[in-house]
Length: 147
Image 1 (cartoon, rainbow, N blue to C red):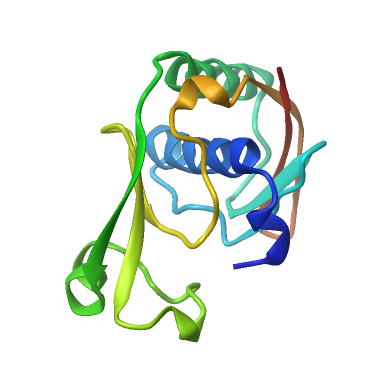
Image 2: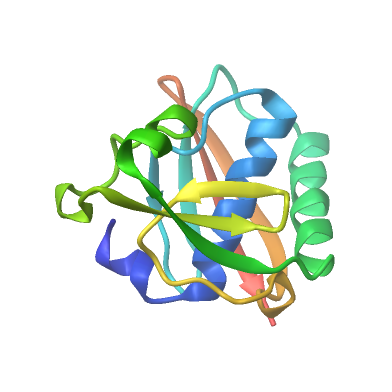
C-alpha cells in the first residue's frame, strides 16, 4: 500500500466505505487508484461517465449514514488461498505473505488492507463529497472529512 495510506486512519476508513458505496450503487469495482491524505483525498474508478449531482449527493448521504451507524472496524486474517476466493489480491504488496489481513467495517465492507484504521466508524467524522470529473474512462472522486 502507498505510504500515505498509513497516515490517517479516519480518511483511510472513509475510503473503504466510499468504495463499498460505489460497488453497491453502480455495480462497479473498487477504486483502482487512490491518493489518501488528511486534508483531502481522491479515488479513481473505471466508469463510463461523470456522476450526476443527484448521484454525488446520494453517495455523500449513504457514506455518512454508514459512518453515523457506529459500525465496529476490525481485522481478521485469512490464508492467501482462502482470501483469494473472496477478494482480488493483485494490489497487495508481495511482502504481505501468506496471511492476508482483512479489514471489516461492520457488515458493510470487507477488504484486504495493510493500512491503519479507526476502531469505529463514528470516529471518522462527516464525509464531504467535493467534486468529480470524468476523462478517458476514469471517474475521479474528490472528498474530505469534517470533524
